[in-house]
Amino acid sequence: MTTSDNFLGLEATLSSFERAGVLVLPIPFEATVSYGGGAAGGPAAIISASQQVELYDREYDDEPALRYGVHTLPALDLPDDPERAVEAIRAAVADVARTGKFVVGLGGEHTVSVGVGRGLLDALGGPLTVVQIDAHSDLRNEYEGTPYSHACIARRLLDDPAIEQVLQLGIRSVCPEEVVFVRANPDRARVWYAEAVHEDKWRDDFIARVRGRRVFLTIDVDGLDPAVAPATGTPEPDGLTWRETLDILRTLTQHAAVVGMDCVELAPSPGLHMADFAVAKLVYKAISYIMLSGGMEKP
Ligand SMILES: [Mn+2]
View 1 (tube, protein in one colour):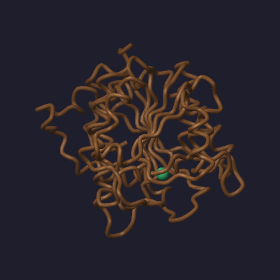
View 2 (cartoon, helix red, strand yellow):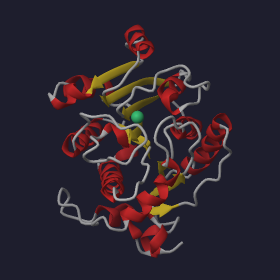
View 3 (cartoon, helix red, strand yellow):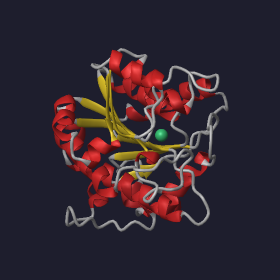
View 4 (cartoon, protein in one colour):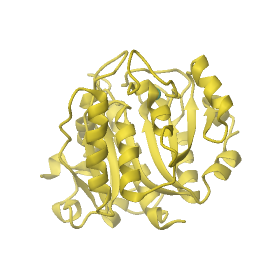
């Protein structure tokens, strides 16, 4: 592994497996995409763009990556069948998480998050709360003939009673089935639509739901506004701003222990490399918040 193919382009001393506190796992899976394609190219684009991200972070007056170190694993080679792919991701993530290092999955379509969440449960045990930044609720029981569609991932995670709740922020697009599900299961699913975030009407309720919990954080890049991250398969207007997104991540990591995360659905597009860069910078910010807030040691 050279500096050109590891996340942030860190020197060997900071990116070796032994030294790193963070493991980045590329998961270039794409099979159930329903609109714009290209998510399979997401991990490579994020890693490539991350080489351009300044390591110095003004919020910390420091280069946070030098404190925790990041190792980039080889990309997973997965079958096309989504259910089998989810099982393979689950096994791989469980192996990686058992090292005790912090795991960051890079998708790939959102279906990969089912495997990441289940793998974290296998390795670290439950219960886990899922915090999902997304334009879509992904709470359908089935979509286009498969329960393992990218449009069903929150529902699949909730199949496991060890997933105690899914908390969603930035949502703009839902179907009647999803609205009915959320109303019928208020203890297990909670949605803060984008307007609630824009109007700052999420914070207190969100903190109450995450405080002291162990969290799997899943970021669908379409949760952000297309002005920030336009290169994605199912873009929706009125998304989260950069500042709102960081506010959510900062608030989350101040009150909960994030034990694993992923970032999915970047579909790199020619001429839109600003999206690759924004997502790479967002992943770096998220890792820093998690690792430097005490992360896994929190209650
Ligand atoms: Mn989405």
